[in-house]
Image (cartoon, rainbow, N blue to C red; front, side, top):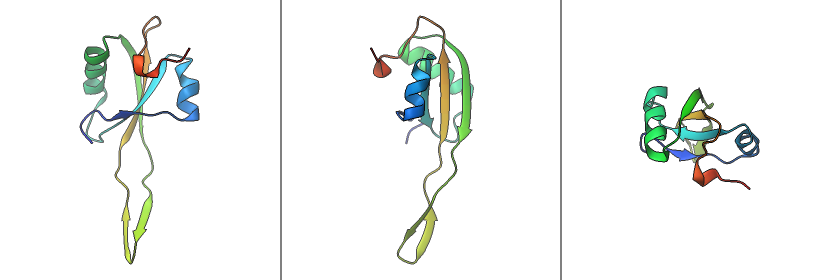
Length: 91
């Protein structure tokens, strides 16, 4: 996964779309300022807030070897009213 990541579509994130909030999974090393700049440049929108959290890692077992899934951060991005990200457009 590169620095930015990919959008997340779950029941909760679809409810957040009504509040003009969008969710993305990003690399753990990414910070809020990098993501804000990237979103504003790439999608040509105005970001007014970003919340982030790390999801809990999950244990995976393959044969006798036990490991963990890849860690990532989830960013919830709030846009100024009147702006939207086209890949999330719901009508």
